[in-house]
Amino acid sequence: MSKKIGLFGGTFNPIHYGHINSIDNVINKMGFDSIRVIPAYQAPGKDFIEKPTPEDRFKLVEMGLLDYKNKVQVDRSELDRQGVSYSLDTLRDLIKKEPDKNFYLIIGLDQFQNFDKWKEFYEILSLSNLVVTSRPGYNFPHEIADFPEGLKEYIIDFDGYTAVLKNEKQINFLRLTDFDMSSSDIRKKVRLNQSINKYVPIEVETYILENKLYTAEESVDYDSNDLMSEVKKFVTDLGGINPLSFDMRNENQITDFNLVASSQSKRGNSMLAENVIEKVKSSLGVKPLAIDGKEDANWIVIDYGSLIVHLFYETLRYEYNLEALWKDFPKS
Image 1: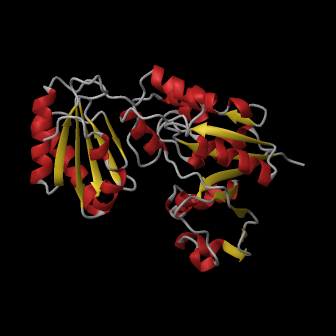
Image 2 (image 1 turned 90 degrees about the vertical axis):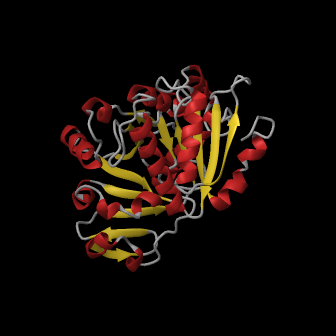
């Protein structure tokens, strides 16, 4: 009987307990012989991540999964292949090398919503079964009509838990104990100098802090006060609500200034972020060192090194309440 191998890919920037919880649960509930965890070199549709490097992210995954080394193999095939990491290419390579294995591609329910937009998605389902795990804020399909549009024609049966395809492959839906934390949130916490020990193993936290993976760097040859003033003006001109800046230069913080503003909708927040980035780049010649939160647009962080800009969907601004966190710093 061929071995059942789970394939769990992602950027892992960084790996956290949500990933580890998924891996542990899927192994046990699906009866896999093992799981291959495959860090992407570059995720499809996203900019290449220069820091941390692919090798840094690979090391973080290895450290995060030390307790699972008898069940989990960290696979560097996408790092070695470089370029954009498509699941289809990885599956083709694996099947060519190990044709006797029965592979199961593991994805989150959030990814499944757009699975029919993936590169040659049906060929993926001809090479591998699919395991779809629960994600906070997303609902499993109740009937075939709830599946992504492009998938519906390939399904011949669905009992609420398993969909059987015309080619006899399966899509398995698996409910996990949800861990409502994202890699983006963890990166934000590091930039705010907040503890992340509840969200990642100690080895992962130590590596992140010792190597300063998500902390601010020096911005490109620009006085931080001038940069803050110019960016604040751009945010105001572009319709940002109540922009406030906090001066942290004399307090041994990870950045000189934090700037907070908001928008009345997620779409407006996303557009504000894009316009600020473009305006700063074209007018000042300064590019962000990192950008977080563009996917859901609730809280977008634009990191210029000596200045970190926090753009919120208005209602969430008061939930996070960074103004209270920084109440003792000079404000303008």
